Length: 191
Image (cartoon, rainbow, N blue to C red; front, side, top):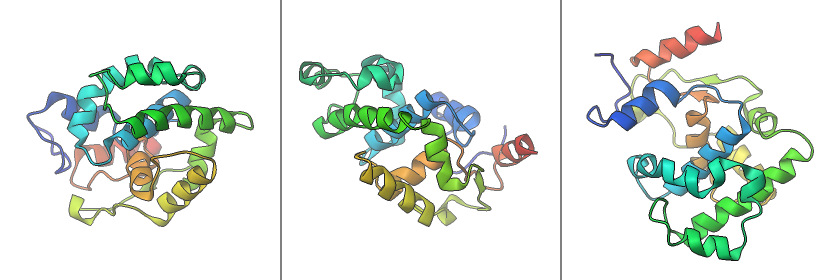
C-alpha cells in the first residue's frame, strides 16, 4: 500500500480517492476552481469528510458550478437550497456561493478565473518540502494576498486559511508531505 499524507483516513475510499487523484493536482479549469473555492468555504468549521460526502449534492444544487447559472439564482432559489439536505444548509454559506458566482462573472469580464487566481503563485505551483503535516502552515503571505484581493472584489468565505486550503486543493501549492507517494508523482509531472 502506498504511503500517503498523514491526514488521509485510510478506511474512507472517497477521502483516499480525493487525496490520490485530485488534491494538489494543478487545475486551470474555471468551473473546478469555482467548485473548490465554494467547497473550501463551505468546509469552514466542519470536517472535510462532511464536505466530500455532500460534494455531489453541491454539484446538483449549484448547477455543476456553472458560475453564469449560479449568478442568476434568486431569493426563492436560495430559500429552496436552504432546505436541501445534500448541502450544508447555512444561509451565509449558501448566499456566499451565489454572491461569489457573481464575483466570478465580474472577474471573467476582463480575463479568466484561472489566470486571475494563478497570479498569486506567479503561474507556477509552489512546492512544499514538509516531512509531516504538522509542519504545513495554515496560511501564507500568498494566501493572505489572495484573500485580501478576493474580498476587495466582493467574494465571501475567502479568509487566508480558506484560500490556503484552496491553493493546496487545486495544485497551486504541492503540500503533499515528502514521504507521500503523490509528492514525487506531482514533481515528475512538472518536469
